[in-house]
Each structure stands twice: as structure tokens, then as C-alpha cells.
Length: 352
Image (cartoon, rainbow, N blue to C red):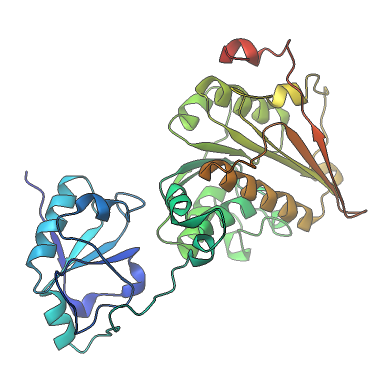
């Protein structure tokens, strides 16, 4: 069946609900524009696509009388973009209904404006964030700030894997959740939190534990993995699958008053097994020895920084260093991670 254009009447439009508002009118526009509009040639469908972070993201198209935008919306629907709608009656009907109008050329602050203004970042790297897919393993004390900052930064799709439910003892550090989330699946609560923060971000929620059996399926197709898990078995599963698929990943850990952050791309540098060649037979947990809540915030924020640097291709991204943080002494330290010739991952990757 041929795709049909979706249309919306001006009186039903809520401007804040749209990720982008696209003005397809040609020539001069002395009568103004809908607030937040981006002017694009009506024939430049690729240009419109670049504004769409996810196929179902809500996008409003409008033209003078609604015909050109209807045709464009139909064409984009044929390309699989289900969230695109055309303004019924176009700008003429919008103006007649006394809806808000901005003078043409009046700057409209974008939520990512401070990223775009950042030296060495700019719109191109923001677009990389918008088109990226990141998997976050664990929605706990570390995953919470990671998810929050990646969502706020405009990462296009965030996958969240966690088989746990929110417990009252989580709330002092897992700041993604409030008291009303107690008893909920963590991934369901995370989906709701992300939707409240940034409706343009798509979330793929997986309410199960990440392990060696499902690791490859969950990581495949991702640009980056963030390991915010709390046990060695999961960390090794992330490491081995990411290495086999050639996907870089950021790792973090926190316990008591301390935390650590590292980032790996086993195809070109060391991996988690190089950092910990001999794992202990038992491991302490926050349940056993506790953790200061803000420590997870510090480490999670650093993980989000490194994740963004890897996504946008920053030359300063970490690949062979471990950053540690001691909250008691307020001290950071950095050590070099060396590749081990005997690391089994070298055989998996084939390039070490």
C-alpha cells in the first residue's frame, strides 16, 4: 500500500512536541515564520532527514498552503519516517488562526546551542551524537548519570540493559529514579525518565541481565557500549563481545569512597582483560561494604564525557589510560594500561 502523508491542524499543534519544525516555503517570507523553524528546500529530502534523529521522531513540515509539505511528508513516509506530519493549510492557515509567529531570521536558541558553540565541537559533531546508537549496560549508580547526560546531549538511540527493579536502597545514588519508581523495572523507569528529559531520544529497553549468551546480539549495531555493570562476569562479557565485534566501550566502577574510569578499543589498544589479567575469586559489592552516592555521580559523569568523546571522534578520547578517583583525599590519578601479549582477546581480534 502506498504510504500516506499525515496531516495536523494548526489548532492541534504543540510546538514543543516536535524535534524539528521545517519551513518548506520558497522565496521571501515577510510574514514571519513558526517559532523554531528551519528553512530547507522542499526538494531536499536528504536535508530534512538529517534533522530526524530516529524514524519515529515527531517532525512538523509546513509550506504556504499545505500542499508542498504534504507531498514531502508522503515521500518521507515512504522512506520509513513515521513521525513526520504536514501542517494542514500551511502557514496561511496558521497565521489566520492567530498562532505564534516569529520574525524571519530571529535566532531561536537550540537545546544543543552550547555544544555547537564549543570550540572543536560544532554542529557536525552534534549531528554525530544525533545519529549514534549507544548501549548502556546497567541502569544503577553509574548508569543513571550516564543515561541522563547522554539523553540530555542528544544521543539518537540509547539501549538500556538491566534485569533489576528499583529498590529503596538504590535511591541515594541512582538519581535517575524517584520514590514513585520503587518496585518498577529499572529499564521501564529509565525509559520514562529519558522521555521526560528529551523526547527526541529513542530508547531500546531490555529488561534482562547482560551475559555472555546475549552479549553479541545486544552490542551488534551499536557505535559504543558503556559498561556500568557491577560485577566481573558482566564486565568480561562486555569486553569479549565488544572486542569480537570491533565496538569501543567505556568502563566504570565505584565502591566505598573510590571509583575508576577507562575506555577501550581492543582493535587498537588494550582491553579490560589486559587491565585485570588475574581476577579475584570473590568480589566486594556495594551491598556488602557500601558506597558514597556522589562518588557514582562523579564516575558516571566522567564515563559520559568519555562516551561523547568517542562518539564524536575526539582525538583526546581515552584508549590506554585508567583514571581513578579517591573521594576521601579528593584526588585523581592516571595510569597507563599496557597491552598484554598473552591476552586471549588478541586472538579474537586478530590485530593485536
